[in-house]
Length: 287
Image 1 (cartoon, rainbow, N blue to C red):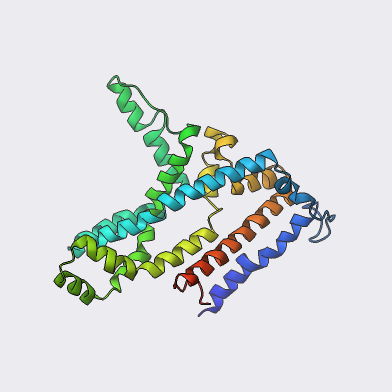
Image 2 (cartoon, rainbow, N blue to C red):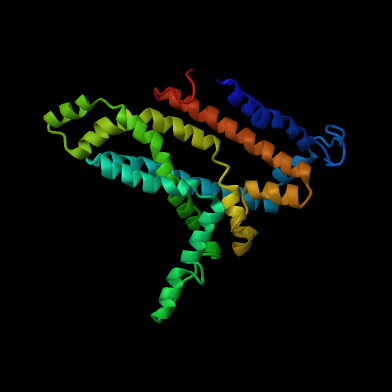
């Protein structure tokens, strides 16, 4: 039963890694694989020499990563705790169904919904015009672009991300809550001393995996809105690779940036996992 999944991983995840050889070539798509001229580390010059476009993309990526780790990662934990506190299973299932729905919408639809609500001709601004009030600009405002991206991610994926946390919460022994209650612990104390320690392992695991993917901040979501705010505010590493490799034809440079991004992700996972071991957690794998 595991063979189909293993085959998919090998075909679409591991086999394409051989294509990283492009990072060391002046790649020409029309030549057979491996026959493009070799240029050594020349394609990495944009990284080592501080190319302004690359530095801008790196800065935007790091800002988005920091904001999303601080705001997006804890959101499903808080939401799972709120859902777990609901006494009625019927209400809990209904709320979960509503919260899961946005996850199944494509980014094209999500971006369109936000434009129809927050755009210059969107629902809110049309309402303000009708009542003689001043309108505001969110869609297309480069100063608010990070906040817009973060709110879109939270609306789309927070509900779906609660699944693992709810599963972990269901495994906590109910007798621990009973014992804490008999000792006079309030709901807040029970959450701090029973609930959060009970799901600490899954929190650490998902945080480590999130760090490994931290430099990937949503290619499709950003490329759909890049034209409205410009490259200075919206260019990230993934769109830099696309704009320079697929659009600009600098295949080697794009591959070099992608290779370094992947290597940094691996180092972040290994480093975070080592810190988790020092703190007594299993992390992604045991030491």
